[in-house]
Image (cartoon, rainbow, N blue to C red; front, side, top):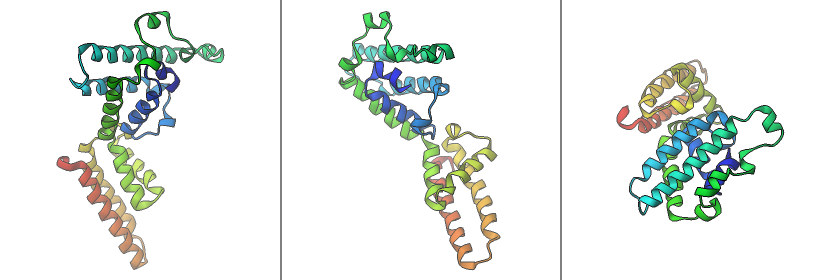
Length: 216
C-alpha cells in the first residue's frame, strides 16, 4: 500500500498510513489491502478537515486530484489477481499515462504547503479517532503486556472491534472492565496483592471515564 500511495504523496504516504492505523487502534505494519477502502474514507475525511486552510480553490483541487489518483492506484492494486502479483505487475512500478498527463509528479508536489497541511490534518484526525489506542495505553500501563489482551476481551464482550470503539462506548467499557477485574481481584488470597489489584482497577476505571468525557 505504501509504495502505491507514494506515487501521489511521496514520503508522506508513510505518515498518512500511520495516522490511519492509529485511528483504528492498529499498527501500520499490520495494514493490508483489506483496509484499502477504510483508508480511502479516512483520507477523504482528512481532506474535509482542511476546509478553507489551503491557500485557494486550485490548491484544494490539486489535493483532491492527487487523492483521486491515489485511490485509483490503490483500487487497481487491490484488484490484481494472484497471477498479476506473481509477475510483479504492480501499480507502484508504473503510473498510468492518464495520470502523467494531468498530475505533477509526487516529487514536485509533496513538498508543497497544501500537501503538508493534509499530512497534519490526517495526523490530527488519527489522534482524535484513536479511542482504542488511548484505552489500550490505560490497560497496558496498569496490567503490563497482558493489558491489551484484557482490553480486547472486554471489547469482544461488547461486540466491538478496535476500529469501532468510540467515546460513547468507553463508558460501558469502564463499567464492564471494573466488574470483571474486581471479580478477579476478589479471588486473590494475599491482602497486599488484593489491595494492589483493586487500586489498578480503580485507576483503569477513572482513566477510561476521562477518555469517555461527556459521554460517561
